[in-house]
Length: 138
Image 1: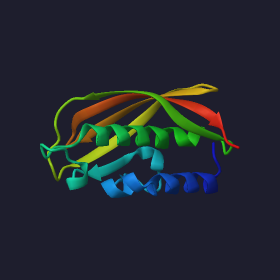
Image 2: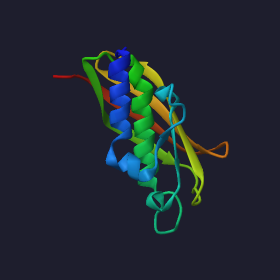
Image 3: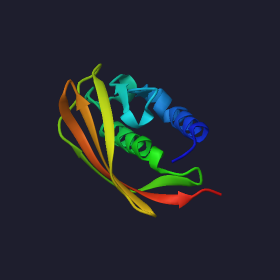
Image 4: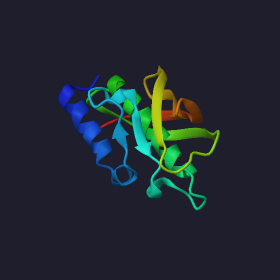
């Protein structure tokens, strides 16, 4: 598990990613980043049909997966996505709040497997299976 200082720095680095800022990504619980994130379906998250762009939800399903895995990484480890399968289940209208959570299914020495879900008004709108490689820093 990363130290408290390292965890805070890694979470801040995720929040500071320009795309995440642009999309309005927020932690669901700032005291518990592994609890996931939420974002509004504003203009920056919409496609030409004025509904949630699939690429946006795909990106944030991956981000929530990293946040869920973070407590299981040491200070000397990082995780990078090497596979992601996303199912977009239904369109999401503009101005809706999307909550995204993830669960670590298994953490091995070199690979971790997560499941992520996006929910709007209690209804599942997208799911993902995310596989991350655990790599040594430095």
